[in-house]
Image (cartoon, rainbow, N blue to C red):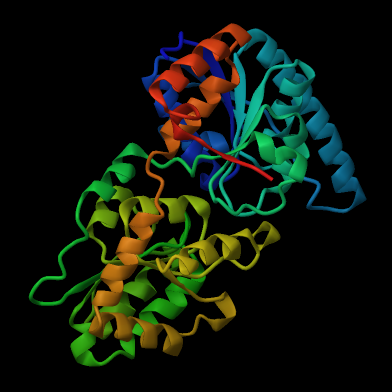
Length: 394
């Protein structure tokens, strides 16, 4: 059913984990002819390149998780001020609906939407529903989840919860249609090391040391691209060079789609955006969940890939140079393990997540007459839920 162009407000902020899927949804909704407005915090607006041609507005927020009593009082007033600002903004914009991507930066906007009776949808990237989304879920028109088994969803909210996956960029979604890179006659293994937008210090310490203790014949077969912090750059480069390992080291990797296409194996954290890029592309991985993540959600994310046979997982305290070296040598010697894990990753990927979430968002704002018409069309075409959406039932 063709929908008329509408205005949608997207509330997202804080980290790339929220902004990347929000940007993918914005592009899909724009592709369908809708007007998109981004409402974010100062950190979120730094990702403006993900929202080309999208009007953006700043609404500051705060979190009760930090600071003592005085900090909580300041947060309360910041949230109240943000909610008032977001309310005036939504009145001015008059969106058909609002989509929130979790985290405390979206709370004022979603609270204002609730007060103004504007329908809103929540998207959860991780395998555990975040605290902000838990607080906002009761009044949400729909809840979109990325993992089939997502923890901390109240039973009463399951009937409005849909499995969409976590949206990724179209360039990454397209990688799954290309074959896993040939290992070739020289049996070279191309290793991509990512540690988040700033590069994880633990990877700068452990990975070069682990690869340096591999047998010389194995080291010669490795090609490494690693992202690390600027202050670690020269030390990591020297470590690889001194042990004869072909490596490129960058403080930031610009072309993630190109590097994923190139890589045979990825080492990284277990943030939702990273994992859904890996599964969309069909790349095996070694994952080290960030131990301080809220509710330890990265461990839950990683467990899903490990259970599917798509990844090997280390707790950070167990992520040592000898342990990593042992696993890498095993994978280099027995490359069928890499191919099997690549196939498993691709099998659980949801490259169509942006389209499914856009379907859900459009369906959320249908009038009663439009909803009846849409259901008749769906019944006639035997399509089931819009976009093939899977409702999560109790």
